[in-house]
Length: 301
Image 1 (cartoon, rainbow, N blue to C red):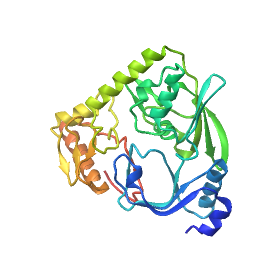
Image 2: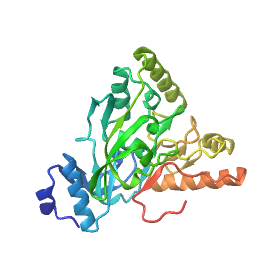
Image 3: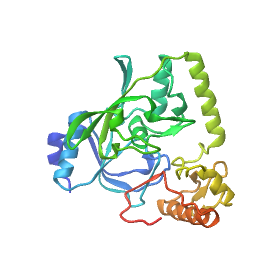
């Protein structure tokens, strides 16, 4: 149990009790956080992590709330949101420096305005830079990690700078899950601003046509198996439009589950089970989830 009076002695930011989390996720699903904190600076982040660790209180850093499914019971402990004070972009030593709380769309636009290429394919990803780094989010042949030079993190209570090779980037994953990302620096090649802008525009149009962006979702639910596409396997298994409660397999892109009618987290979990079982029975392939489960004490999928 957190003592608010104790925290306020070491924490300058905002603390909200029993904060509903559905509004912070792209799925629009999830219960409440016991404590929702918005740090004002690095010291606040260090202090809230230290306090939580010393008192045995779990903490979770939330970005833009994409690529996650939060339990209907919410998240016990502290949820840390960095979007308020870590929402900055700047140029330094021929690199782009981004705070962890910056939305990917804003980051891409900032890069393009200075004719930097290499990140335009990420523009449609509904994530913060911090969240995209943790998951090494990618699209259209590009990944967040492609042009990372260095990542500033809090690890074991201390601020550290990790070079790209120390981050363990891999397909939709990294070794950054055990850290709190504060900012990252990107070394990007120069390009033609008009050409880069046009490419971004075309990719976003393609994305909007191919994905159910108009209905709440968490992005691709499953990782693509080797030499296969999860969407094709799900589609060929006859699951497009399959429903459970308020959750449905998208009729536009089969690797998306959409919240079409006030779905609960349990609705999504049950639909995931149906998809995995059906695809396995028909193809012999076991799909691995890309969307992360948060706040679940125990769940078998």
